[in-house]
Image (cartoon, rainbow, N blue to C red; front, side, top):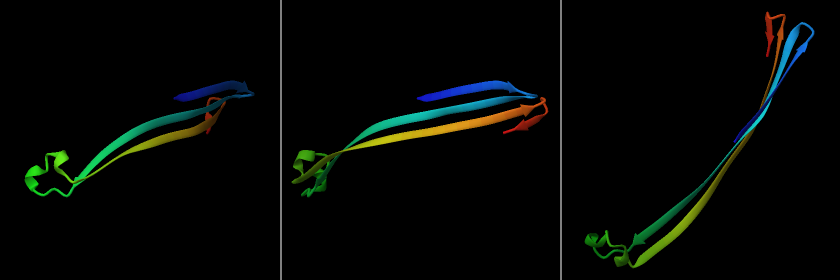
Length: 83
């Protein structure tokens, strides 16, 4: 989500422009893992229930990003640009 606002005004011999805004991002991920160990034979590796040791876990991750930005410009007599 991004918000932005711009303001523009004429001052004396020039134009003043002011820009301000913000940006927000969020993401949530779930990771599920199942680990099997202790197989008695390599032939049984594709059969999860044949493993004497099973470990399952879930991991939830949240990511949030927020930023603010701004810019001020002044153009004098349509010749000189101040940023």
